[in-house]
Length: 271
Ligand SMILES: Nc1ncnc2c1ncn2[C@@H]1O[C@H](COP(=O)(O)OP(=O)(O)OP(=O)(O)O)[C@@H](O)[C@H]1O
Ligand SMILES: [Mg+2]
Image (cartoon, rainbow, N blue to C red):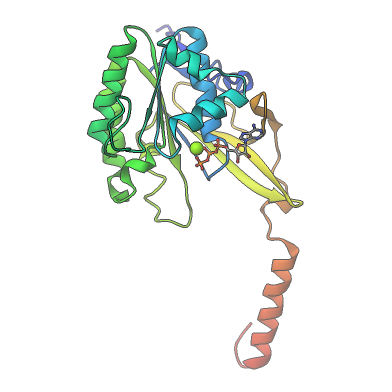
């Protein structure tokens, strides 16, 4: 049997497309996950800017930042979202739930309202390939993390029938309950994970493609940078060295000191 070619959608970041064997398969739902400030929103902005450039119908749902904030951030990377909105190529739906009811705002953070607003926006933009970002999905189950998977599944099931390729961001917090970051990841066709690390007193950011169905994707952790004028830049693959995963020496020393102290206090206890 002949392998049928997978139609791919550019992420807007050339090197990431290469890592993805040409891009995200059209129609996929991809989870974009990672800690705060690691680059999720920046990637979503690239994805939408690329869609605008290609004439796709683009919808950006923002739950934690205002529409203005997304437009400003995009402008810092050279993307004119305001023009895209005026040209009817982009609708930014915000969920700050201001009283007064601006037409492209969500009044509640429930998945049914999300889905119906997105469909309304797609109808408004017209026929054609669609790109959708929901940044973030986690906002829809803040009060009920156990609903994460059910809500994600519902959104995927309904919206994938509307010809969208979808990025869903999810905050991944180790401190909160384990159910938190998940849900989105389990229903998604792909997972792009952002990570951060402080080394030598400096914040470093990384990206890893953890899953992409139907794709022989790059398996290596890549260091990234976010730059004014450019946005997300992929520097290249990194080898995780021992010092990257090991505890800092100051912490090890304190642990050893504590162990020694407890041995002195309790000489009978086996070390
Ligand atoms: N113009 C710029 N020049 C350089 N760095 C920038 C610029 N704009 C944003 N950044 C960097 O990008 C970071 C924000 O990244 P981003 O908004 O994508 O994070 P995020 O993963 O979406 O986080 P959160 O979960 O909090 O929404 C900032 O903290 C800053 O370090
Ligand atoms: Mg963000």
